[in-house]
Length: 87
Figure 1 (tube, helix red, strand yellow):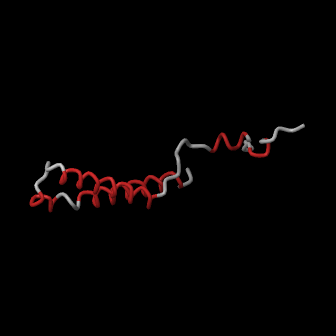
Figure 2 (cartoon, rainbow, N blue to C red):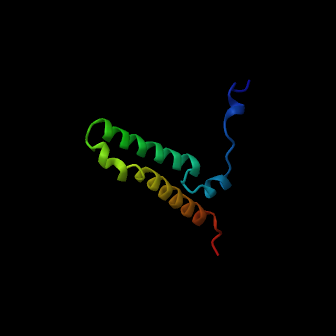
Figure 3 (tube, rainbow, N blue to C red):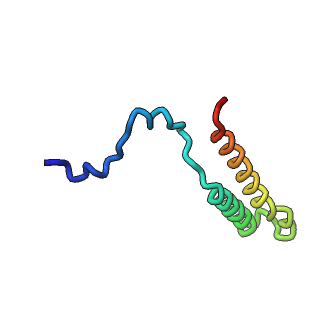
């Protein structure tokens, strides 16, 4: 009699173990939007808690977008470096 969940176990081979790099593939769009959402949440929290005056907040609003763009650029560069074959 076989195990009822036997067909659900992943098949692994010695080749799979050598190809693992330890990095999880990153969806860059999700990363960028997550950083932007987190940054806008921080800006909102600062405004609501009166830590920043709303009149002076005009310099604070672009920071989440700049941080999200920078995170996307870094992720893109790092992804490109890993995919190149070593010569």
